[in-house]
Image 1 (cartoon, rainbow over the protein chains, first blue to last red):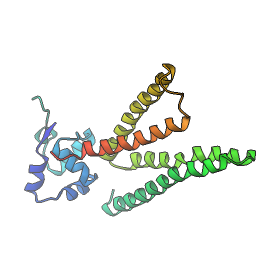
Image 2 (tube, rainbow over the protein chains, first blue to last red; image 1 turned 90 degrees about the horizontal axis):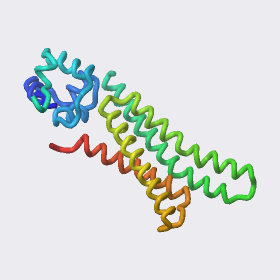
Image 3 (tube, chains in turn orange, red; image 1 turned 180 degrees about the horizontal axis):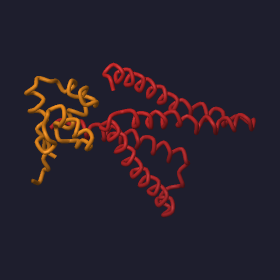
Image 4 (cartoon, each protein chain N blue to C red; image 1 turned 120 degrees about the vertical axis):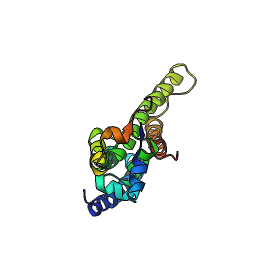
Length: 65
Length: 134
């Protein structure tokens, strides 16, 4: 799953740890999501969408699309 | 979860993990010493200590999976799945090697130590897999 998490996060000058605190996961989880090594669950994807005031589809895109 | 609470839980988890690893390592040694004693009560204690040494580690891992975030849970669950599959291969490998008379039937200790080592290796692999650089 490709995502624009890093771009959205850096645009707000948030660190990975800070974003982790906002959505309730560890910095390692944010790193793994940004790298595309870990796809978040639907509840976490909703939390991420909420903190960036975007829809899930704006942040995540399936690889083969 | 508040960041301070998360940090506190991480520290607690680390020490619980460390303590349970020490128990898992020391338990079999103590159990071996007890099993060699002649008294039945000490031999019963050897069985309890030998098996019981694993329980804290298993409880800590279950706790980490339950209270950790989904990424931590994924790492541990993947490691458990890989180590289960690996253990199945190891146990059947020993069995078939023995049945085909390439080796003598190994003691159970070799089997469960192999399984424990496989679990550690699977955990290291899983952590590196999910946390690898691009």
